[in-house]
Length: 77
Image (cartoon, rainbow, N blue to C red; front, side):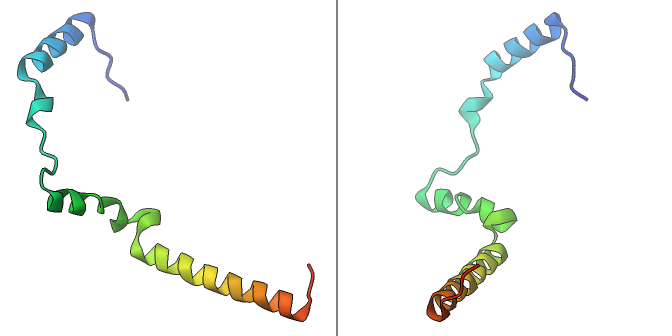
């Protein structure tokens, strides 16, 4: 459930953020090596995972083979 802010709470939060300026203390990668590592974060899971990429590559390989055979034998669907 989303929080409902009063005008006073919103103003107090705005002042706090302006005073502390958390964006100046970013903890993101600074070096080229760190940036290279963090750029691969999405490949740990999901559609970018190595397992999924291998399965997609294998599926595409089979589909290309089927397409070649359809052409070779003159089959139509």
